[in-house]
Length: 240
Image (cartoon, rainbow, N blue to C red; front, side, top):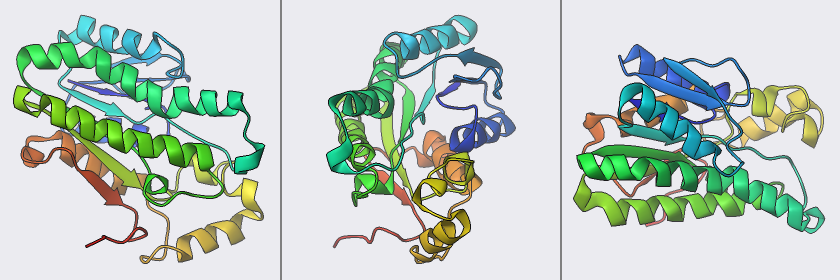
């Protein structure tokens, strides 16, 4: 049984759909009333108590949470010197604390059963900060540290925790009206430039990112924990 946060659109929605296709029970959540899954919970994951409420709803319906995907997040293009304290706090709540709270809620059941898999969706910006997404970059880096911490603390209790670091992906966040491409100029020109900046020469498709997440959740990745898997078209090189 899998909980996927931010499953109403983009990568999260495709993750939920792929898990359902694999035969898993899925509880999704997001601010929209529409989302795939056996159960969909309308929730604002940036608010205290909301991630916990989603996990509780999943446990009430299915008796357990085996897998957790902390996918919810987002940003706008902003300059570092323009960000206010309130901007930083809002980004902190959405891009990091949503994952901390959901993980904290799911861990007791996983520890009791001595089994569980968690995947946190971070970003290439966590490894190579983006000048146009300063708060997002810093907090997604925090998610990498949090992922490794959970992996180290609970490995001996049968719980795996990994992170995925996608590059720019062809979802509404980039392609939608007023999205990240529009915020940087003429949409087609921006997208062409962003795609050309990847060694593979294009944006990712959400199905490609979701496939990595679903793999990491599965028993096929039973010896993988504490990792930060790049799914970025080769954007951030391996450091040897």
